Amino acid sequence: MIPKMSVGWQTTMADLALILFIVTAAGISSEIQKRQAPVLPVSGEPLAIYSDAEGAPPLSQWLAEQAPDQRQQLSLVVRYEAGHAPEAAAKAIEMARAAGPAGQSARIILEQGPKAEALAVLAFDQGEEKMAQTLQQDRQN
Image (cartoon, rainbow, N blue to C red):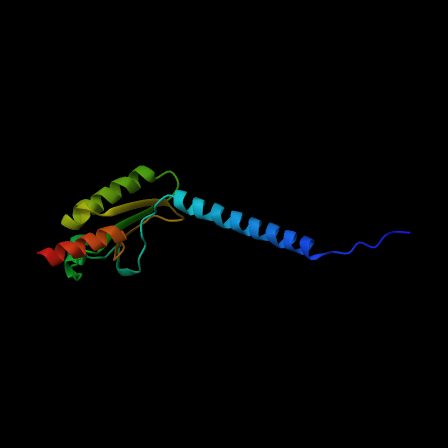
């Protein structure tokens, strides 16, 4: 004869406490991982995109036609085929020089891709800290 075991409220409470402990531990672990994650550049929606293709106007002319705003960030994205990284880096530096004053603070991104291409992207994607400082400086002037 097998005795019948009854499950009381203590067992149910112990199970719920264990589940609560596991959920809390997982939440704390993910918060710690978020704090230790590297800070990545903010990526905003592009306002204007320039492609350095045949027949395109010079980069300096394209930038002159855009509405100037100190909060905009110029990003130069140069994609290259495998084995052509030095040429891509030289192209990015050439574009930064051609951009004039905007090129001095441009973000340069080199990435390997299926084909070589060079883009310039204007977007409101400076860091929040930089944006707030710029707004405060504008108010003081």
